[in-house]
Image (cartoon, each protein chain N blue to C red):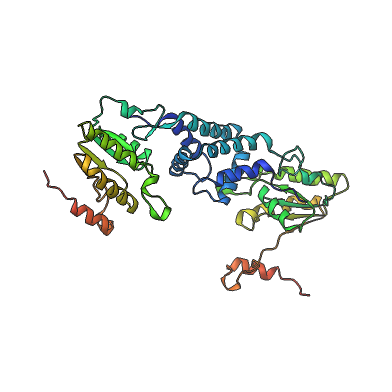
Amino acid sequence: MPAPLIEPVGRLIEAFARLPGIGPKTAQRLTFHILRAPDAEARMLAAALIAVRDEVVFCERCFNISDAPVCAICLDPGRDATRLCVVEEPLDVLAIERTGEFRGVYHVLHGAISPIDGIGPDRLRIAELLTRAEARAAEGAPFDEVIMATNPTLEGEATAMYAAERLAPSVGSVTRIARGIPVGGDLEYADDVTLVRSLQGRRAMG
Amino acid sequence: MPAPLIEPVGRLIEAFARLPGIGPKTAQRLTFHILRAPDAEARMLAAALIAVRDEVVFCERCFNISDAPVCAICLDPGRDATRLCVVEEPLDVLAIERTGEFRGVYHVLHGAISPIDGIGPDRLRIAELLTRAEARAAEGAPFDEVIMATNPTLEGEATAMYAAERLAPSVGSVTRIARGIPVGGDLEYADDVTLVRSLQGRRAMG
C-alpha cells in the first residue's frame, strides 16, 4: 500500500481544520508551513496556545478577559461603577478603552443573538447582565446608565433591543451608541440605513 | 491607565498572525475562539504542533515528509527506482499515490520558482534533484524517465522547464504530465490555454 499521510501531519491538519474559518485546504497549507518554518515559530505558537488557556480567565463580574478572577477595570476604584457599557467581545472593550472616552465599567456578552447561527440569548452573558443590574438595583444603587455598544449589525441591534427591554426596569436609563456617517466618510457613498440613522441621530449644533 | 490586552492573549494573536494568509483580524478571531473553546481543543492543537516538529522529518533522498531518515516509498523494494516523479509539495505525492497509477519514486521540490514571490531555484530542492540524477548516471544506472509533475501554473511550468533542461544530460527522458480538459469538464467552458494544450496533447484512439 502507498504510504498514507504520516500520522502527526494528519493530526495537525485536523486540528487546524477545527478552527473557525479554516477549511481543509488552508489547514493543509498551514501544516506544511509549520513543517518548514523555523522550529521556534511552531513552538512559540504551541506555547502561546497553552499560556492563553492556563493564564487567561474571564472576569467573573464583567466577563472580559482577565488574568485574575476579577479584572483590572472592575477593580479600579477610579472607574465610574454607575455607568455600564455592554459590548459583544473583549476586543470591543479594548477599542473603547483606546478612545479614553469612557470611564465606567463593562459587560462582555461574548457574541450577539443570531438565530441563523443557532445563537440564542442563553448562549450569551445576558442572564448575568440582568442579574448584575438587578443586584445593584436591590442594593439601592442601580446603574445610572447602561450603554448598549453592540455592533450596528442585524445581530447587534437585536441583542441590544433584547437586553434593553429586560434591563429597563432595574436601571436609570438604557442608551444605544450612535449610528451614522463615519468620520472621514462620504455622505454620497453611505448606505441608506446608515444615512437614515445619521439623520435620526442629528443633534443641535454649537 | 486602561488595561491593555493582557499579555498571553497578545502573544497568541501575534503567533497566529505570523502564519501565512492569516491577517491580524483573523488572528484575533482565532485567539478568541481558542479562549472559549473546550480546553482539549486548544491543547490538541498545541500537542499536534509539537508532534509535527518532533516526529516529522523530510526524507533525505526525496524530501517527502517522513517519520524516518529515508521514507517508506524510497525504501520500498517493490517500487521502480528507475522512474522518478518530480512534484512541488508532499501533498502532491499523496494525490498521485491515491491514483495507484505510479509505481516509481518521487522527488519533492518544496515549491515552484516564482520570481514575484522571491523564490528562485536555490530555495527549492532542485540542486538535490540534479545531484540525485547525476549520481545515478555516474553509477551507470540513470533514471529511465523523470516525470515533471509540477502544477500546470506559470510557476509550475517555469520550474518544470528549468529542471528539465538541467536534467536532460543525465537521465533517459524527461516527460511532462498532460494538460487538458479535466475529466467531466466541458470544452465550451475551458480556457483557451487549456484547450490549446488539450489539442496539442491529442493521442491516437483505440
